[in-house]
Image 1 (cartoon, one colour):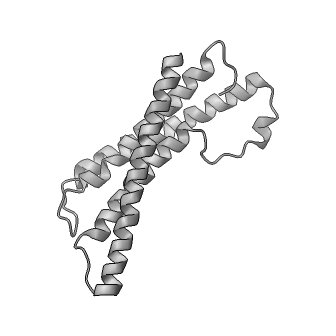
Image 2 (image 1 turned 90 degrees about the horizontal axis):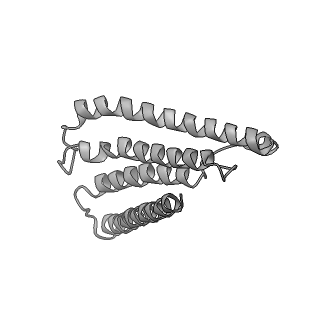
Image 3 (image 1 turned 90 degrees about the vertical axis):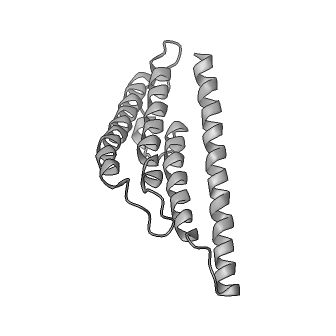
Length: 161
């Protein structure tokens, strides 16, 4: 079980690094675009579109990482009052619902991507699949995190998720 915990931590750190790298790219690009627009009355063609695509990536990967860290939005006042075993069951149910929601997102995003993914973006002229594919990838990562926490919760020597 330790290898599973260690691999989850390494994966989370890798995803956090990727998010940080993309976010740094967003910051640099936005500052550059503002300076160019207001200082030199010019722009980088496709810069705004690239910022949007990077934001989509940081949002999708970040949402999965937040699920993995159990920092997603939750009101746990009553759950925290429960004894350990019912609390464990409620937390597992919560993880199963998050898994179901993300699974539905994957199921519905695949036909959407297959219908619209070949259209080119307005300015960059790249297929939209490059910005859309992160939706099922991010949802799949969130499902993996949920399954990881469910396995941990069901392990005999661990009560709390």
